[in-house]
Each structure stands twice: as C-alpha cells, then as structure tokens.
Amino acid sequence: MKRTIWSIALLIISIGAMAQKPLIGISTGYSASDNTASVRFTYVDAVVNAGGIPVLIPLAKDSLAAAEVMNKVDALILSGGEDVHPFFYGEEPVGALGGVNYERDLSDRWLLQTAVKLNKPVLSICRGEQLTNVTFGGTLYQDIPSQFPNRPVVQHGQRSSGTIPIHHVNVDKNSHLYEIMQQEQLAVNSSHHQAVKDVAPDFKVVATAPDGVIEAIEGFPKYNILGVQWHPEYFAQQGDKQWIKLFEDLVKRAGGNKPVIKEPNMNHTKIRK
Image (cartoon, rainbow, N blue to C red; front, side, top):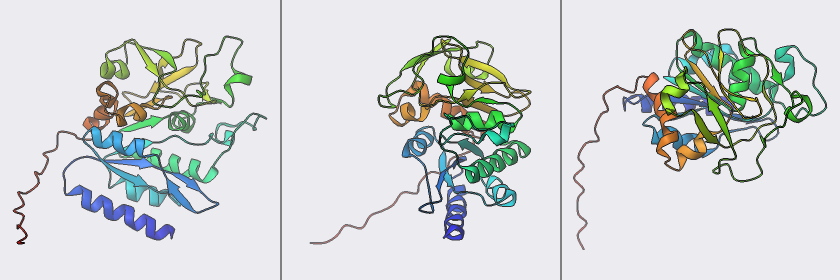
C-alpha cells in the first residue's frame, strides 16, 4: 500500500509538470494505526489560490525516497501536526508533552534537508516551523504553559475556529516576512502549545507574540526558508488576499514566473435530441 501511494504521488508530479506551474510539495501526517497519510484541504486550496500545483508527499521511508520526490517538486510546505520528539534536540520528555510521531519527524527532516541541499524554497507552518528550528540546531519549549518564563501568556491554543484570528504578532521590519506582508502587526490564529526556544544558528526571529513567544523565523540568506507558528492556510483557503501573499511568495520563490500553458479550446459536440 505504501509503495502504491508513493507511486501515485510521483505520477501526479509527472502530470502536473506539464502545466508549467510550480509544483508545491506538502508534507502529510501519518497514522500508523490505520496506515494512512493525510493533510487538511486548507493547505491544498491555499496553494491553488496562490497559483501553484499542490503535491501531497506521503511518509518517506528513508532519505533516498525523500530525495526522489524533492527532485521532482519546486518547493516544500512542512505542514502542522503532532509535537516534535524532544530526542531530536537532546531533551527528555516533560509530563505535558503531547503526542509525537517519530517516523514523521524523520520523514519531514529528510524532506527539509534535501530541500536545502537542492536550494528549494520552504514554507514551514506550525509544527513545521518548530521542526525546522530543531533540524538546524535549535530547541523548543515542550509546553508553553509550564515552561515559558514567568510572564503573562496569551491564548496560543485557541478554542475557536482556525478561521478566526485570536492574537497579534509583531513583525520585524527588517525581514522577508515584512517584505511580503507590509505590516508591522498581524492578527493570527493559534493552535500550539510548543514554541521555538533557542533559535537555530543562521536563523533569526522575525515575529513575536505580545508575551514574547517566538512566532516566526527565517533563514535568509543562507537558507531559503520562512517558518511561521500560526496557520495562514486557513485564511488563504477562504481567499483572503493578504494571506494568499504568503503562499504567492513561495510560488514565486519556486519559479512562479514560468510560462503557463493555456488550456486548449475544446469544441464540444452538441448532443442531438
């Protein structure tokens, strides 16, 4: 079954390549209990609305499989999901650690490392941002409520719909994120209890919540990576032009100026009564 899913993914890539639009790989979640790979349609619609072709990437069994698919796509979105296993940043699990998925951690790390080697642009979202930080040598707060320094903490695990902004983030004007959004303050949704703690070398913090929690990092110019802690795909799926910019930027970095092949005019034969 896994081999079949992987073959289908590569077939979709082959078909999509003919359209000349950038192929945007999206990492998927993996459930060992029912042997499935999945991702919310919010990611798919966000990529489509930004002018890219979404390609869902199932669990990579090894680094070679990850390299095979990353050679075919033009960019990578690391999607959200479970907590990152603390072993990857040299810590033991605390009591408030949520569910982890070690196999997915490995797969996403292989995809990310290959994307960097091939200079493919990356947009890391929520868990994806955290895993990016860890992969390049950073650490995480395993649980914000129990580990973050003694300060007031805003609601980072909102209980309302992800389509509703719940708190603000302050954006560094000297950042790629600001170049995209052209705003020093953004209203974002929030669905996490982990966060970046020590920032990885060659990355910088480009957005923070009012309580100081790191909300976005980027690796420019060394790494073609932007990572955000919130879920912009919820807004982009709804057609929010401001948030579609974030995905349009990824499509542009992936080669969004490629000529698009126009659909041929189809003469439909009328059915006689």
